Image (spheres, one colour):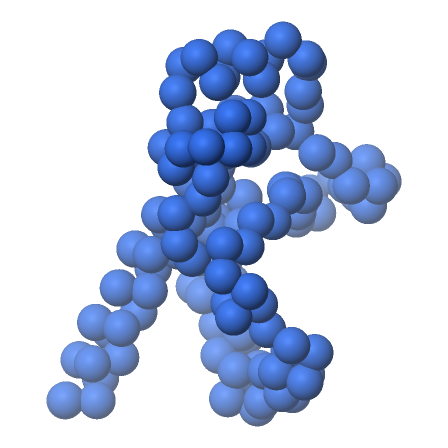
Amino acid sequence: MGPRKCQVCDGSQSKYKCPACLIPYCSLICFKKHKEIPCVRPESASEAKAAPGAALHVERPYYVDEQSEVLQNLQLEATASCSEIRNALEDEELQKLIYNIDTSPDAENMLSDAKSTFTDKRFQENSA
């Protein structure tokens, strides 16, 4: 994922995200302008009806700077049907990591850190 543009002024690279709705913005001026209109964290209908203790999914807008980063349906289907990926997703540690990234307000940095950790771990397993 590349740098995101400020969704308020649409001119600068964003450095921050609104804590309520997660829209990227670049400065205090843009944040104040954004806050002139009340915003809230998006909530899906399934979250509102979720049973107590059920995992919550935070709906957030997706911004794509490079269209080449978007997976096509065929790629998504191939990923979902891959037995190696399906087996890996049974790991509770990986499930917790994915959940923490998905629910984090700083998901992009958490994902980057997780990639580094996972790559280091795989390298150590393969060299042992």
